[in-house]
Image 1: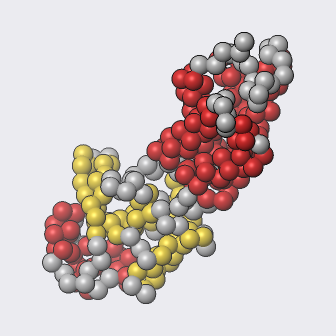
Image 2: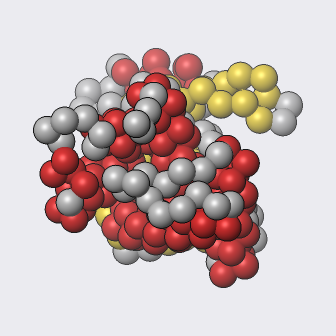
Amino acid sequence: MEIIYVDSLFFLNFIIDYLLLVLSFKLCGEPIRRLRCVLGAALGALYAVLCFLPGFGVLNSAPGKVLLWGLISFSSFFGCGRALRCALGFLAVSAAFGGGVWAASMLAGGGYPYAGAIRLDLRTLVFAFAACYAVLSLAFPRRLAARHETARLSICLRERTVSLTALRDTGNGLREGASGRRVIIAGIADLAPLFTAGEAAALSYPDGAAALMALSKIDGAPRFVPVSYRAVGVSSALLPAFTPDSLLIDGERDSGCVVAVSPGGVSGDGYRALM
């Protein structure tokens, strides 16, 4: 009799799916959304458990697997700049990993799958994932490395638009605390066309808390939220951030970002913002 422990099955699949989602984000050059990865991995792990329960055999069918891919992709990648590309990347990474696991299982004497499950121990699983990552690293070396490339931004607020070049750095993990959205930082000098003279003057205050206070007293000003950050020589500080009416990154709409306004400039060799 085949004995399957539900807790082991759930957590093993959770770990696998989480690592595959992280790898998909890296492969597509997108900042990793770890909470989204946790949600997607939990859905995948729950699916794996349900497949072995009576009455859920239909989940093992092709439509059931396509539905799972759609649910995991939506929960993990919705709102990022390259959602479809990430979803297809997740499909490709999963297929590569599945083939690697099957091959490793056969080499380890695991035999053919039973009811869609492959028998393998943890060492075989680790070896298969490492082999999959190594192959993808050779195929996409720049994608899986930390990226320091530029992107073209188009930020629209109240029918006013500014365009500027941003440094795309996957090492930047700054997030807006309440929503978890990614933060793009630009200087007030570059964002000034989006604001009235009074708003621009308030956003020029070096103290973020004072800037937020001044903005709250201006009628009709956009809603700003504080973004806490730390940097070299700065233990803790605030930047006022707003949600643009629309944001295009390299021509693709992205609703998963807020724009923080720095009183000083954010510039370097060929860029005027940081994301």
